[in-house]
Amino acid sequence: MSKQKFKKKRGHEWRHIENKKLVYTVYFVLRLSVVGMLVAQFFNQNYENVLLCVLTLVLFMLPSAFERRLHIDLPDTLEIIILLFIYAAEILGEISDYYIEFPFWDTMLHTMNGFLCAAIGFALVDILNQEEKVALHLSPFFMAVVAFCFSMTIGVLWEFFEFSMDQFLLFDMQKDTIVNTISTVNLDPNHGTAAVVVKGIQDVILVLEDGTQMPLGLGGYLDVGIIDTMKDLFVNFIGAVVFSAIGFLYVKGRGRGRFATRFIPRFQRRPAAQPEEAAPAEKNE
Image (cartoon, rainbow, N blue to C red; front, top):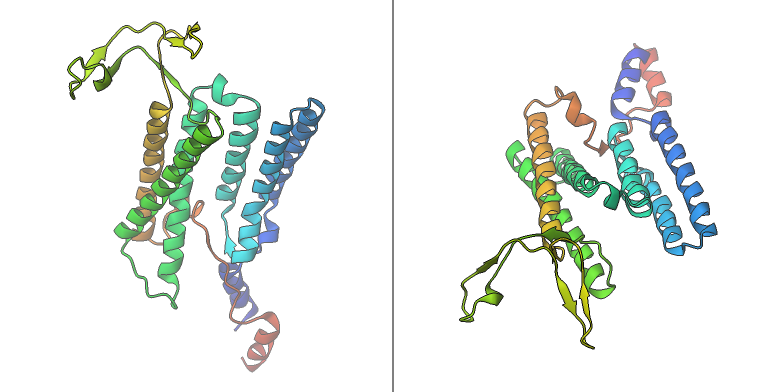
């Protein structure tokens, strides 16, 4: 085997994780920003945000840790998007209140989450499909279906988590929505299942245990979480469908789609022959 052939084979089968200069640059800039935010929140005595900053720093280390521990290669594009996603969700969304200032922020992140989770689910199936020791050979269509189901499952589990935090710790992760029309069977005068529609709601007055009345002054009825949850699942669905379709086309034309390869992790495989092992073969030639 010539040196040229050996180098070509080595480059094809083994990509050094340590050579990701762009990823490390983005990682360094984001990490520096989070550390600065952590210091600022500490001096402001906002210790809850300090914990969020610490959590963000820990999450930043997970992609690299998974690469080394599981011997997989996360494409640069995917890894950078994951880092930006974490930063956008925790630092910009929670600490900088982007979830409140920009109504589309949560929708954007949930759509991206559906896309990324579908990419990860697709990669898991693709890796198993190509592994000789595993008796799994799914068609491109079923690979796309598994990726879609994986993404939707992650989305549902996250909504379970938000609901649990709101119920047991009285958070407001499932953001409320102001509506002006409701339809409910609870107002049926016959106590049946006929839905009564109430339109033009402009305010809601709360009556507390001591008889105190507290107008909310929100300009409508307060929907507690359900609309936000369904919207999140719907945009997760869109992201999952988009990548599942991309993954399907990628497998159908294996090796011809450059876009999908930027999002699909793959196993790191060392070359069968190391440099010192290749030298005797070159002499025999």
